[in-house]
Length: 118
Image (cartoon, rainbow, N blue to C red; front, top):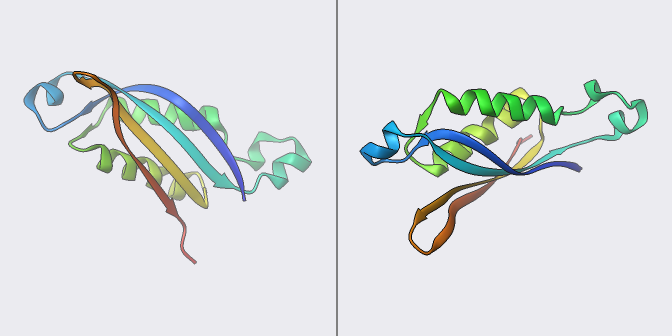
């Protein structure tokens, strides 16, 4: 298995359980590892034979702008499911962090791994 990665993607979304968090978008930092065979793209040199990371970034940006999630865990599950079901990944590791939400803490987040079961 090969891995396509996207590190430190900063996106704005409504995330949290408190009234202010439901009203004011926050920046989240997302890092992705996307498992898929890149042998076809390596041979063909054609982006159509792999997952186009620009399309992934655009899709996430558009989706997160219009949604609210109470928990980082739910947001991570949403991203993982999107990558597995719509982009054809066989395995994903999704890391999502809120930035500067607690005094003295730079990042708070969650990391999940999911894969397609046979």
